[in-house]
Length: 322
Image (cartoon, rainbow, N blue to C red):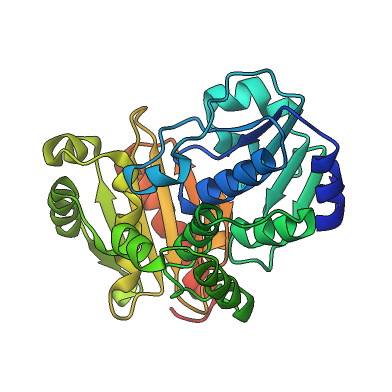
């Protein structure tokens, strides 16, 4: 793995064609916004490019890929965006392309260095911030739809600019996207404010599962596969559940526990200062950012909860909160 600059990444892309862009499985707004912004820019440069993701694009982000070509060609160059480890690509995509990623563009300090070249900026709130800088060097005209892709990326990875990872650069980029034609009001309404009726039912069930520990410093919410079936909600809507535990007054560590179809449990950890979500998730084989991280537990539910509580209790003690 070789770490490269934004200018070097731009040079590499200029020299290539038949470029495949990989997003991570269970895609969020940043991986999709980054991927489709870059893809649209490459197409504008006259290159053959497409985006590939293991899982379907969530409904709220479907507009990002309107009119985009299918990934039905053999790529000469493979780029991963916002993908910190091979495991995050998903089983099928990882098996096919994991050992041939030429360039990874990422903002996770936990990036495993699996790509031949790595463009990493762990001070960026979202990978879309890096893509914006890259497109400026490439000299691509940022159309309103590219601006919307980038805005989706920076807004979703910052909780609509509410998280501690927001910097003045983040806000300036958001302002630039507004100036360049992004319909930010519509995006904010559809992504952050609109709930489907099935999701409203799922949210009600999830709220009934909330548990608190250690005097209210740690809170969890649990969503089982049966709850998805009963509510009719799609798993792509789960991300809105992940923020619930941390929103409770006094909580320093919040965790959402989602049963996956294979019986394992996906844990999303969200923290308030001074706790570090990435350090907590790392103890359980995961990773992420100081304020938001995740891991997968291959234990029964009760044992998964116990393992999570043990790690969080240790972290709270080390932070002098217990």
